Image (cartoon, rainbow, N blue to C red):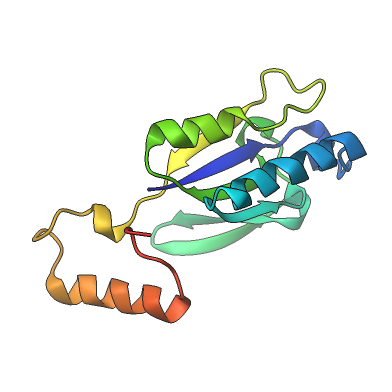
Length: 146
């Protein structure tokens, strides 16, 4: 099972304020522990929303809305992608995240990543499942048994 742990943004991350060395060291230690356990697939920080964009759809057309974005509760500052055996294990890892000083209430989100293997056999056409498996193979992405 794959899960994405999403770190929420705030006024400091939006202002481009870099974290303290103490927090950077704690995050490196956390990432190292995920890697040593063999569950870490990716971990990245994100630039402030001024360097991002949203795509909005209306009447079948897409338009680009450039950042910055003002709704801080909707912003994310980084993410971890992990592969674990259960939701409970994902929660255990998320609960180990270092908490930055003064960031009470901000928290993280933990979302299970949908995988084609989650679709019951027979409900996805065989040719569609084969395309999904071929794409994963080309990308070097492990399947659900990994």
